[in-house]
Image (cartoon, rainbow, N blue to C red; front, side):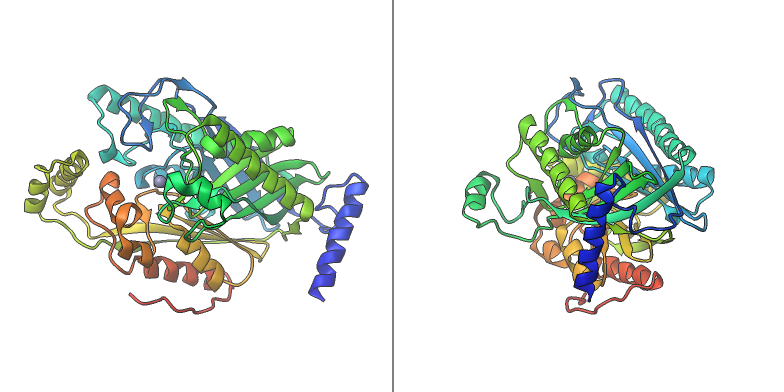
Amino acid sequence: MQRTGRRMFVLSLAAAAALGLGPLAAAQEKPAWQAGVARVKITPEKPIWMSGYAARNRPAEGKLTELWAKALVLQDAKGRRVVLVTLDLVGVDRRFGLEVRQRIARELGVPLAAVALNCSHTHTGPVVGENLRPTYALDEEQTQQIAQYTRWLKGRVVQAARQAAAALAPARVGWTEGRATFAVNRRNNREADVPRLRRQGKLRGPVDHRVPVLVVQSLQGKLKAVVAGYACHATVLSFYLWSGDYPGFFQLALEEDHPGAVALFVAGCGGDQNPLPRRKVEYAKEYGRRLADAVNQAMKKGLQPLKPTLEFQYREVPLALAHVPSRRELQQDLKSKNVYIVRRAKLLLEQLDRQGRIPGEYPYPVQSWLLGGELLWVFLGGEVVVDYSLRLHRELEGPLWVAGYSNDVMAYIPSLRVLREGGYEGARAMIYYGLPSPWASDVELRVVEEVHRQARLLGRKVRQTAGNQR
Ligand SMILES: [Zn+2]
């Protein structure tokens, strides 16, 4: 039955397309969505310090592509709104994320739960706020420049949301899913071996090659906005030019294919995924094009229309750290030969002096939106490894989109498996983020339990599976 229904839906789409109507026109009789989209340039006007790589020894030297803040506002039939802002940035810290979301929530009259920020994790963007601070050797002038840029950026992001809300107009909203295969599990494959392993079909380790796509059309069927997700680091490029990396080239490619439409990129659970091979501009362009092609193909295949209803949940769950160092331990760290451990110790000692303690838990943001009573869109903070997306897809019934790098990029978020294996994503990266130790062993459990809780509140069935041990 379902199969026949699906086929008829696709046929009716083809008929609608032949009549010059958009693919969503035939299926939605009474559209009551309102949607608005806007974009604002956030490329730094000065050559400030770049984020993502510790090895850089000088500020930016120019620009390959612009960097963007793009905002999509959706309003349902009852007037409830959500605001998604995508950013061509490596990450933002908790203070930045909260302040900007609160300002947007106030201006647009929506709850904090209805505002989501997502960072593309481009490694050729600027340092923002305190994000990854121990990674960089900044002098006083550079620190000032970053503070100045961060203030300016906050205003720009709020402006993007404001403009999107001002552009609200009747719309149809649908979703679909494509596939792209350039993400490789970087923990399980040596970078130099990847071309050979790929040829031989021997790439190892978990990946998530889904490309979830949200499509917004005008009532006349004109494409207004396309949001697409992918679980992979934006680390093709590592040089001294501003660029959106492959997510930036994806947005350019899709906007070239559909003049007048705005493309937004949402980073998924790509904490342990790299685009390989890499380090050439051609690769960034190629992966962007492949993502755009995947989106175009998925849209052609047919869109699932979404009813104009919105629901949302948000909570910060305390994630425990494995160990809180004493003042003596931090003073020992000041003598380390590892410059990043020294910088982290300085920051933590300052925190200890200021606040009297180093917290043993971190307030971790988990957010869920339900679109059309159907598509569950989960936004997780931090650099979430791919295991989370795969697990949640097994455990949550129905259409699901899991984003990482949302609202606050405070650290890597390893699964229990990755935490136990250790290495960069499991342990070492905590130093670059300025956190005092790896996460405690219940990190995966706490994150997944909160997603389950929100999913149930939104009426979604949760399948219990093994792997809930602490
Ligand atoms: Zn990363």
